[in-house]
Image (tube, rainbow, N blue to C red):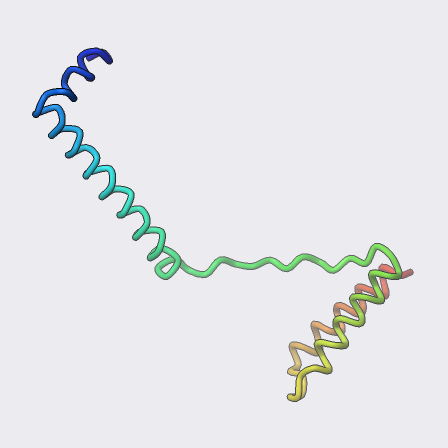
Amino acid sequence: MNIQNLSENVQTKSGRRLVIILCCIASIGVFAVFIWLYLSPKTLPAPVVVAEPIVAWTAEDAVAKAALVNSVATRSTQPLSAHDVKVKQNILQSINRNLK
């Protein structure tokens, strides 16, 4: 089937009908893909997030990161959990190691 035959088929009534049917099938397919993309995050397990190690390249970065840690820790009205304290200690140890 070449392009000339295809253009002649589109000009006939059955050719137009074929084009309409193909367009309907394509639009249903696109709609199905959007529905699948919308529903898939709810059915798939949550991705595993790997935290980047905190690296302080300069003393200025270390001071900024320490200030951020302190501001986050002091913003909370509730006492820090054991996990939060451990995370804060790890961050501060990382900053101290990078300053040496």
